[in-house]
Amino acid sequence: MRALGLIGLVLALVIVGVLVKKQMGGMAGGAPAAADGRAPVSQPRQVQQQFQQSLDAAMQQPRPVPDDAK
Image (cartoon, rainbow, N blue to C red; front, side, top):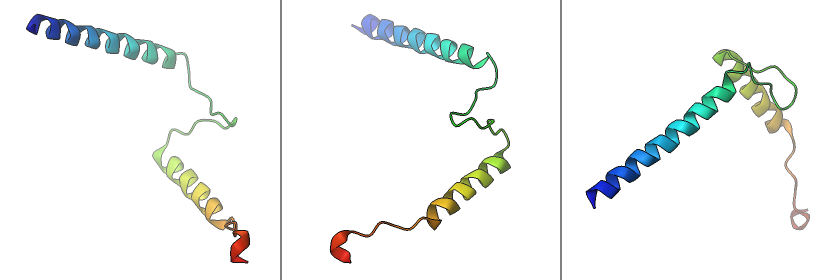
């Protein structure tokens, strides 16, 4: 019974290892492009600034008012 549990654990580790290797192999092909056409950001400060700008832009949009509240 313990042997089955050990075999299952080893099998799960092998599957995870293969998936990780496949995932890492896809990343080695070059820098990934952003979905909206912008270049990917690699600096944490730039990521923070972009997040802050996106948040500020979202906060500037007016909230929709339901018809029954008018």
